Image 1 (cartoon, rainbow, N blue to C red):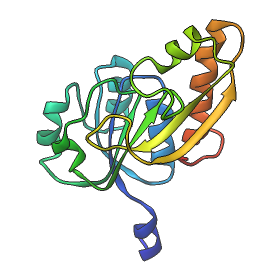
Image 2 (image 1 turned 60 degrees about the horizontal axis):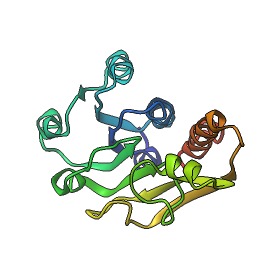
Image 3 (image 1 turned 30 degrees about the vertical axis):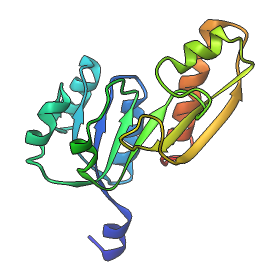
Image 4 (image 1 turned 45 degrees about the horizontal axis):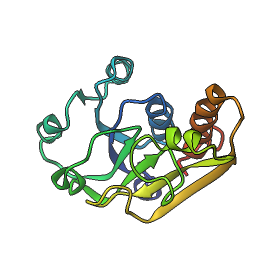
Length: 175
């Protein structure tokens, strides 16, 4: 391992239950980053983590013991609907980052996509932002706004697709 590779790789924890978590985690692994553990109640994600030999737990309160309280460089919250307590945010030496399925600050909170559809928005967005103790209040790192399809079923697909693009499925990097 060279000094430059040490400086360009990092360790992380990932929390979440949605389908975007696995492609984001795969991007991290392709770039030789280390995933110390995953917190998810999703069986598909748990099975994937086990196949990758990544420790996983189903509940956030199990995470500290799973990583022996050791800090990591980053914590990623991806399609995670649970509040992350300060003691877990503190594990991330360089920062905690959240994927939000709406354009912040306009659509902060839960069900951003549903509210945009109900409000008959013609555009929507996704946001990667720093996590603070206050929900959806951290600095925006990357945001993408895009036109919504007029078919409500396609809108959810467009939001997931845009999240994957920003997460690196097409760019082969996060953000």
